[in-house]
Image 1: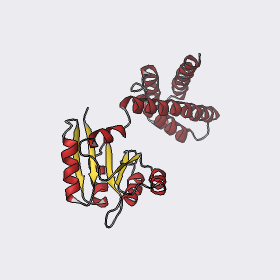
Image 2 (image 1 turned 30 degrees about the horizontal axis):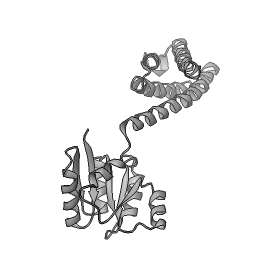
Image 3 (image 1 turned 180 degrees about the horizontal axis):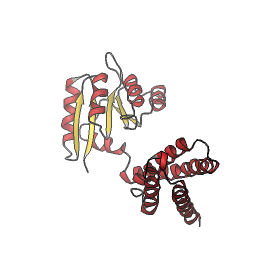
Image 4 (image 1 turned 90 degrees about the vertical axis):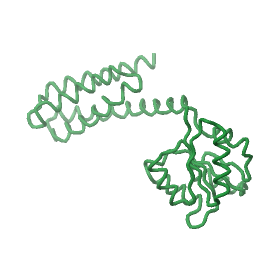
Length: 229
């Protein structure tokens, strides 16, 4: 397993020591930045598994850098650990409120830095479990949306808009369901998407769409029934 680390510190000596320390473990690939603005650009281009962020830097300090990282969808979920000699309770509370996952005190021990960094990285199993939980929540939300859109189709109102929304939901489920262990739902979603795309929105077979939609909804609800039994 390769761990990509972005280390941000305005002191070249500290950057060099951290790179040597992390280099003692072959699993780490480290890139260094000397400023917050540089870190924001590098993190978006080379998304790391974790960012080690100095607090006191000229120009854009660590907390301001973290706010900018969280505002970008590409970098918002990257774990950030502050490295600072300022580790008083009020600073720790501030760092946590900004979304930092922890603090490594400075001066750090070069021989244990890699272990400290690893302790702040979410295990891959936990990350996958969280993503699957998010997907199951998405299924529940999609069922509610699809049932509402099915009623709209039956009423004959806003047909084009309803078909477009159904197609978008089906497309997302067709791509993601198999990844999270529900290949049958993925197949049903793909059939629904195909039913909508056949002939274009103006000449789509509404009866076929409603049939495919009913099968997908039944498949999702059957999954829910098995999970709750």
